Length: 121
Image 1 (cartoon, rainbow, N blue to C red):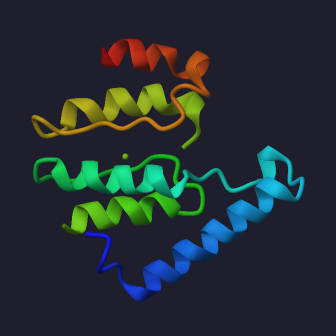
Image 2 (spheres, rainbow, N blue to C red):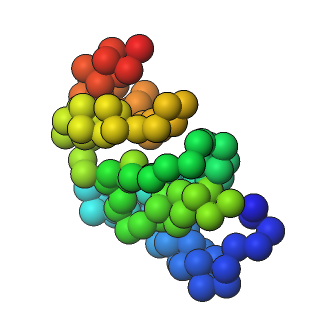
């Protein structure tokens, strides 16, 4: 799955990775940075999407679209943290049986996401 990433997608991913890396080291305030996932998490999302049963995929809170590119790779072979609980209630009942819900930054934003995490258990 990762050996045949389309060239245009690969170029855009590298651009976003460079912007993210620069912003994390040059003092750009966190609120002004791209809020994207590390590439390792992107690969995980792609694997999870590829393993999920056939159905629609939705991503909420895309930043600059970096994680969406990874999600699209997985599907080819889910807004801010404060409102993800509402998305959970709207999305989960419409998921295919056996589908996956992935919540990134659940540890960093545990206080905000706790109601959704408790509901998911």
